[in-house]
Image (tube, rainbow, N blue to C red; front, side, top):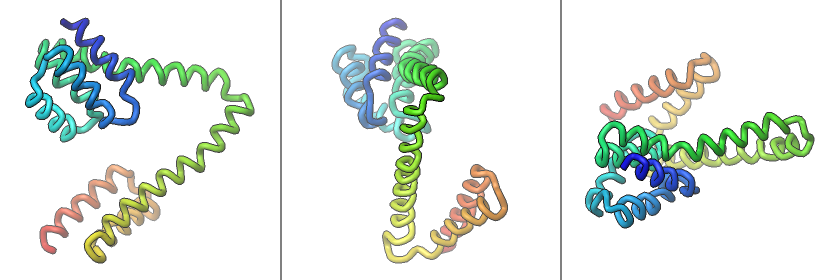
Length: 178
């Protein structure tokens, strides 16, 4: 049973490109259709729980299914099976990077990717800010909390975690009274 758990979630981890939502059909195929470890209703509950808990959906699903099928050892084996392909891919890429990092071609590719990554992060940040600040009219309180976060990070050099906690607390208290 443990070997079957490992192999099933290894496949899911290896072939679920495109994020958590892309893993859902693979999990369903393996767990509900092929192996019949869960019913469709249980699978629906599993996806709900996997989305609510922190972490990737595939890994959370592996842990939950492993627990249901074989208890704690099943949870560990299924989770390890799910993350092993990623560990292998990152290991290979790291090896290749450190071996060939001084090649001008590699440096050129990485230099070209940096602005694209910054643009993607900036685009996501602008989209989130627009949604927060202007979705239902102008949200002055939300804008004030965003400015508070920027000031704490840039002027006072707060850690990002402390900044999130501070802004979250300010938002919780503020929205209770608005």
